[in-house]
Amino acid sequence: MAAAAAAVAASSSPFLGHTSFHARKTSVNRYRRNSDVGFSIKAIFWGPRKAAEPTKLDLSLGDFSLTESASEGDTTSFDKSRKLSVQVVSSISEVSADEWDACSLDAAGPDKFNPFLTHGFLSSLEESGSAVKETGWLPQHIVARDDSDKVLGVIPLYLKSHSYGEYVFDHSWADAYYSYGSRYYPKLQSCVPFTPVTGSRILIRNTNYRDQVFDILVSAMIALTIKFQVSSLHITFPSANEWGKLKEKGFLQRVGMQYHWKNHNYKSFDDFLMDMKQSKRKNIRQERKKISTQNLTMKRLRGYEIKAKHWDTFYKFYKNTTDNKWGSAYLTRDFFHNMASKMGDNVLLVVAEEGDELVAGALNLIGGDTLYGRLWGCLPEAYYPSLHFEACYYQAIEAAIEFNLDKVEAGAQGEHKIQRGYLPVPTYSCHFILDEGFRRVISDFLLRERAQLEHVMELLHESSPFKDNTT
Image (tube, rainbow, N blue to C red):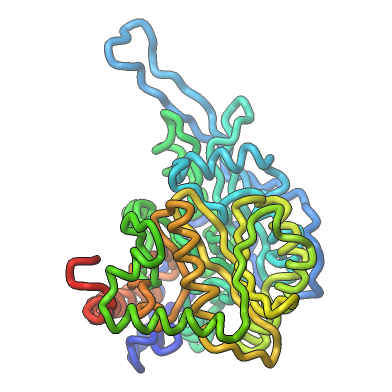
């Protein structure tokens, strides 16, 4: 395939302006040329939404040997060997919830439990018809089992026919491919669909073989990318540790930015406010007073307190937001009901009531040390000054203090969060580009983007609303 590159700028980064990278054709492409491929995937065709119907895809990625060295001082035993079989499954339902969640929990540790990586959350996306083939998200999860059929590792992975619902923007990369007569889609994506939340992506049981399983699973992802003859493999919002390791495996590194609130052992919301500069503290108090003057009542509902009627109403709020902002809703009504039934007390729904009527809501999930703010919406045509700030930011801070959580992640974008106590932090993504020509140019782009992003983050930290002795 002839390789080239073109402009990858404005839509990919709000900080780069109109940077242009000029094309250079090359015939070098070692990944494709050296691969023994019997088929390629040309396209995924979208169709009507429908619930996922598990289809057996007996796609083996190989058998591998795991070796455990004898313990120190043990002269009676030799190296122990186990077999690891790696396969692709087309539905998460082909892995038991207990086995998937054991991998997820071991990958993060109980103190860092990430609810978005659970079987319950990911299966809700599939069962509700939100992340399925018909919406451009074909599950291709990788599963590693030992010779006792025990799952030692999993990767949430999707074959995608677009770049929507990712929050790491590569649309201009696709444009560059097409401008030179090449295909960018489909591509492989390891992520939590529609969820810009950092967490492990290569979920591995805590055994003596952990490092070996990690290396095998990364190699399996790359092998699948080559076997499918797709343009690229992307791992978005991985942990910082994975991000560093994947660089050694040939992945390009990308840095993004979000706004998080940090809990400095606060005992109350007022305790948090005392760390703010006087003018910022005054502004927040004025915003919060507007809620009561509008006869609004805020409630935080958790687990069984959230009824079906709440989800039906919240779906209307969500649709109102997507209709006004994005144009189409990624999630179906069934997703909210399914997810809530499986996630239990890990779900926190902030609602605003005017009299007996629900007028707005904000969806949060509770992790081991983090409150994750996800979705917000209100009644169509409704306007309540400062309600968005109250429901999404201040109620989340109060809840994090109440639950003794370390931080609040309030989702993507929004410099307005800074003056409300949410400071910029880096996020990460990794990209494996098969075509060497595109790889070189995208690598150069990412270096430029990263330098400018780091500069922007420095400037934003200088406008921190906190007193000088607070970080």
